[in-house]
Image (cartoon, rainbow, N blue to C red; front, side, top):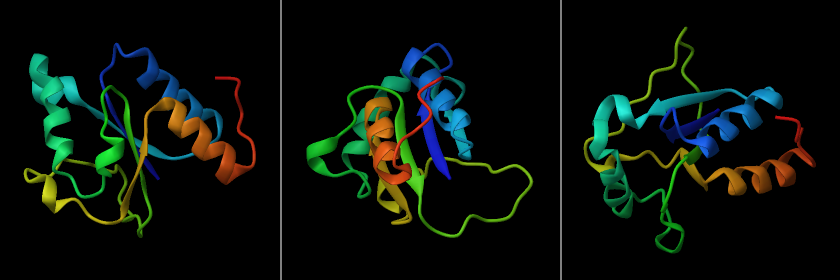
Length: 117
């Protein structure tokens, strides 16, 4: 399962969801604008302290994409909330990066992806 953090009017966020959909991969979409409004850009400061994001790969744009590597809880509707403290991030979240990182990751993992999104 993947986590796509973005905003509804972000072209690359839409592309990330389309890539995942076209490859039949599950994801949770976290809309920054619903939670943070116009101050959603403050999220970049948040991720500077997040242990799941390597210092040399800090996000500078959206989407911000993670892959959950742990056991996915069996709930009807997965719900995700950013932990208040970035240090509370679970090690089960593997940082992927942005849309181009996602495409590269899926090309490697899936040995080719459906590029018709």
